Image (tube, rainbow, N blue to C red; front, side, top):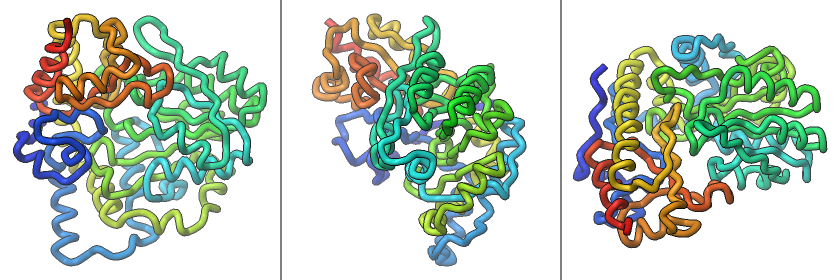
Length: 383
């Protein structure tokens, strides 16, 4: 598979998204989770047609996203999804809030596993619940869910687990066995599991992804998955996510959500998601994965050459790298020094919890040249 080529910097700087507007042109932006590739042709064509005919109204109740995702899940994961058990909404974090409001009561504790996507720390209290931190376990070569720690939290009354699968920022893909064990714990203690699977389409070669709801019969009973095309196809601004269930009781809860959650789905988001999840976009996605696969390995080589004190584990999924710079002595937030002195914008490690002190997250969804220059600039700060 020929790797997808990223756009040139002069083209990218014409974009108006936050990645290209937050900093000046002297900064290489590798912070927010936007990629630098041209849009998938099927999405480009679908959106171009919509604009040409003025198709900019309200999103219909059946925009075709559920059926498109069911086909995608079958092709990419071998997972059979009932499209009738899917509803659309605005975005993944809004879906998480709506689910948490219904599976927890005010003041209930919700387990999260830092270092983890920063909005997890915000959406739990937004839903009226309280964050319970059970950090990932460092297994030496990878990270794992601390099942014993999660069990202790559930046994003491935590009512839900907010899971990141694949995990952001580490790129960890949890095994079927781990997910099934988590589901057993949740069922034993009467808790729910909400699985954010936004990075699931971006699984690298040699890695098998297990959707939480497909991990076991118990997972289907206790779980809710929230998915979107936005990360894999760079569609965050178009606003479309899916709530997926696999059991009568969980489906009834989701179907009982107000109609307003569907009205919040962006029409362009729905149109683009249908195109993204169609078989027509599989070749584009595979080409992007080939580019990301090369970049995740290139990053390891670049760090070893230019930033030898860095600790980096090649991720199982996605285009985000979790890098430990503690050995460089740049403090809790090395991204601040890298931005001010190296003119490279990386996402601050402390945003992901106290486990992120001394760390940065690097977006390698860019051209090899940009990635090389960014790491070279970081390396120039090493004394």
